[in-house]
Image 1: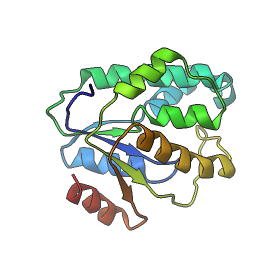
Image 2: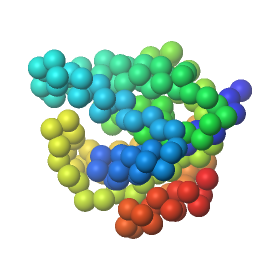
Image 3: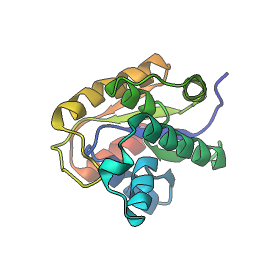
Image 4: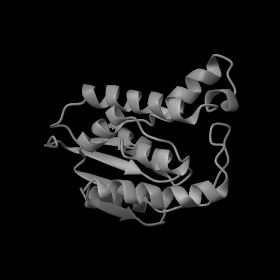
Length: 176
């Protein structure tokens, strides 16, 4: 049985505005979990690795990211409203995108993940960054993979339309 908590997953493709909203929610005093992949890649850059070296083995990369997500979610208070930049089911979308076979322990962890709601951000124009090497066509596929991953796991999805940042923030707060 899935746990009951006050956690909200914030999902969407690269450059959809997730991180901007997460930072604004944090400024408003909400508990947040920043994106694990960005944290990991930033740490690896500091050690001198390139993005190609970091993501050479995509399956291993996704395993490391899921382990970080599990670690951070284990630390959370289930009673506290918390916004999580990319929930665990986002990992399913990456596995599908890269045609990888997911290990059983990962499937189990993702199936047990629980979020009160998932805020799925609609796409914004892509901003290329050093740690986001995904080509435009992959990003287009990711939106559908994300949506399907959360739907298949029975999560309640709230689609966040493209609108000015402050209106997006208010939309999320109005839909808690």
